[in-house]
Amino acid sequence: MVEEIPTTASLYAGLSEVIPLDQNLIVDSSTKELKPFGEILEQGKPKLIALYYSMHNCPPCREFTPLLSMLYEEVNEDEKILEIIFFSGDKSQEQFDEYYGEMPWLALPRGQRAIMGKNAKRFEVKGVPRLIMLRASDGACLSKQCYEQVEKEGPVAIDQFLAQK
Image 1 (cartoon, helix red, strand yellow):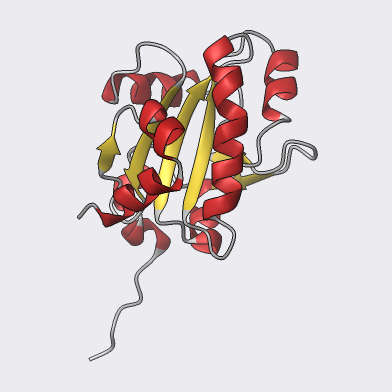
Image 2: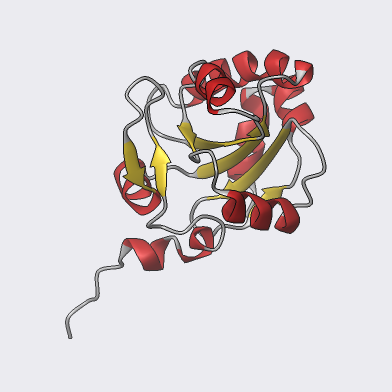
């Protein structure tokens, strides 16, 4: 009997409900390069996916983003543990471009209202900043709002999410 090799679609079926695997995401803020979500997952194989709802003109967001950037770089130093996807509430493309230019992670292109709205409803997003933590292997929601936990505990919070079964 031939053993079936799992496909990206089967490996990340739970995550595909959050973001379709064929949805293009911005992978580089300077070049605006786009890649399908499934391809990004296949290449990086992160253990955690965070959805980061934020916007340029939100003071708490502006304070948290640099801390989250440092944490992102630290936890991914040796291997890809955490992937973050920026969901922008910015009112203009210029605001989006300026703010996303400060971030080292992925972004959902501006104007993807259906995906943003569906997930805002699913995860009860009522304001920003909002950081939602998902397990990459099955898309399970580990926290609908971990912004304060991550802000206070840093890498310890990430370790706690990794330990959740």
